[in-house]
Every structure is written in structure tokens, then in C-alpha cells.
Amino acid sequence: MDKNGNERPAVAAVVAARERVGEKVSIYLRGQRWWATYMHEKRQRREPLNTTNKKEARRKAIQIEAKLMDGSLRPKVKLPLIGDVISQYLAYLKVEGRRASTLKRYTPELERIRKFAEDQGVTRLNGISITLLDEYRAWRTKEEAATATLYHECTLFKQLLNFAIRREMLAKSPLASAKLKKPKHDEPVFTLGQVDEILSLSPEPWRSIFEVLAFAGLRIGELSWLTWSDIDLANGFLHIRAKAGWNIKDSENRKIPLHARLVKLFSQMKPSLGWVFKAPAWSKTSNGGQQIAERRALNMLKKILKKIGITEGKLHTFRHFFVVHCLTQGVDPYTVAKWLGHSTLEMVMRYFRLLETDSKRAMEKASAVVVPVSAPEKEAGKN
Image: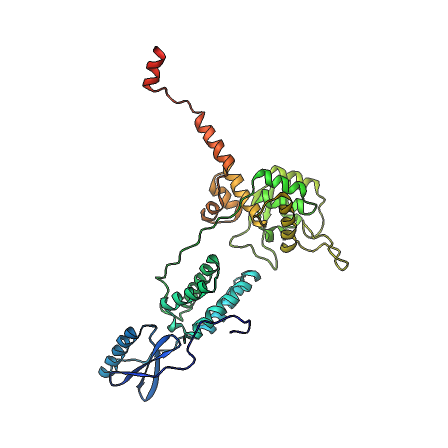
């Protein structure tokens, strides 16, 4: 058990008895993995064999024995500790301006990977292998980790090694050939009717907040950092711009043409100092005026969805609606991607779901095309 009461993967605490292979090399089991030990240049050496198979461990030990005998063995340079590389990687992400929420997620995930590797007797980069990754995936599957969570953790594992390569701590990634199957996303999408119903039941400022999310395709973080200088009613644009203390996720500054509904909304609002949308007072100690908090906005949305009877939906679902609404109205995907702040079409097409009403409408258009009368029908007409 760890400090949180969770089970760790079963690992032998005591090193198993050594088995001599050849004249100079012995192998032994440390945790679930085999290691080799031998004397070289008057020093006792230990080397991970990166396998859980005893037969494979013997084969690798024989190769080491042969190099010892012909004098071609060169002591391996110790690669950095996995824990040290993780610390450097997190520090790098922080300097690069990654969001606090991203670092908050990455930190425990990387620590879980480090602890697992350590439990398997692997503390340095040179001990990492595809076998270790497979063992980690098997353990996390047994722990009933969600498919998307496991995919993210394994991808993060590979990203860590790629960082080590860029920093010349590692020559090549032992996980480069590991193929990870990306889980399919089946995100909910609001219909236009559902959006209008949500807005009609939402009190201010939540009604206006939800309308901007739906008809500008913003993330809640982008909306909470909007100031009145970002709203250009004269030219009809909404600007998403980085500010001191906040960077835009995965994109540069961008501007989105104002939807007619948003032109009307912003025209009716009274500009003020600070944020466009401010949190309402919520306790005796809060008079409101702070930035909109994602948790409070989500809680309000959940209450509204429960009244309507919609079981699935979150703040980001408004962004999904924006994609579908734009595409079904004939806006080309490249333009939608630009409005969303994506450099490729992948994310746009992932969000897109052809709703049943739009599917029927498309077939009605196809049916309206004049179809030439077939030969048998012509003959019947003559009679």
C-alpha cells in the first residue's frame, strides 16, 4: 500500500539468488526484471537486462561474458535518474507557459510512472523499455484506469523521453516503436433548440456567458479573460488575446467575427472596467466582480440541464455546438478551425456530428434534384 492506501504492483522486496552464467557473469531477479552482475576493471558492475524472461536474460548475459573475455566491453555511462528528468521536464513546461491546470495534471501522472518504474527496479533512463510500458499498461488496466486516462499517461511517458532526447540525455527513445491506440471520443453536442432552451432558463450573467460560448466557440478560460477592449463592435470582431498572467491554449492571438446574436448582446451591455463577464456575489464575504470561475459556471449549467432533462453536457459542449452549427450552415472547415484557434482540421472534424435533423434536411435537398425518367416509365407513359 502507498500513503493513499492504494495497492502497488507486486514486487519482490528481496533480491533473488544469483545464477552464474559463464565464468564471470551472474544474473539475478530484482523485482520482476533480470539484472546482470560482474567484475570489470576491478569494480563490481550491475546492469539491467530489461527483460522479465529468464531465457532472454541468460542470452544477454552470455553476450556480456563474450565482451568481457575479448576485452571489448566498455562500461556504460549512467544515464540520468527518471525522477530528475521529470523535474526538468515540468520546469520546462512551466517556463513555456503551460497552464497551471496542465501542470497539476501532469505532476501526479509522471510521479505514478516514476514510482512504478522504481518498483520494477528501474530508476534511470537506460532501464526504460517497451516491456516496462506494457507492464505499466497492464497494471493501470487492472487498476481500472479509464481508457482515455491510460492513453494520456502512456503518451506523456513517450513525451518525457522525447524531451530527454532533445536535451541530449538519451540517444534514442526505447518507446519510439510503441503504438498507442487513441480512444474514440463520443462527445455530446447540443442542438440549436437545446441551446435556446438553456438560455431561456438561465439567469444572468450565466445566460449571456452561455450565449457567447455557443456563438463564438470560446473556451471558458478565454471568456473569463475577456475585457471590453477585446470587443470591437464597430468592425464586428471579438479578439482573443494573451494577457499578463494568461496565455492562449495551443494558439496565437486570433479574432472571430461577431455572430448577429452577439452583436445584439454586447450592444445591450454597458461597458465597464475589468472583465466583460464578472462573477455575481455568492456569499456575505464576496461582493462579486471577480473573473468567472469555471466550477460555478458548470454547476449552473448542470442545474439547467437537469431541468431540461439532458443527461450529458458541459461547458465545452457549447464549443461542439458552435462547430456543428457553423459546418451545417455551410462555413468551410478551415475557417471554423481558424476561429477555434486550431492549426489543423483534426480537432474540428472530431467535434463534428451530423445531427439527425440536418441529415434529413440533406436528403430532402438531394431528393429535390430532378431525376431523368427511366425507359420502362417512359413506355408506361405512352400507353
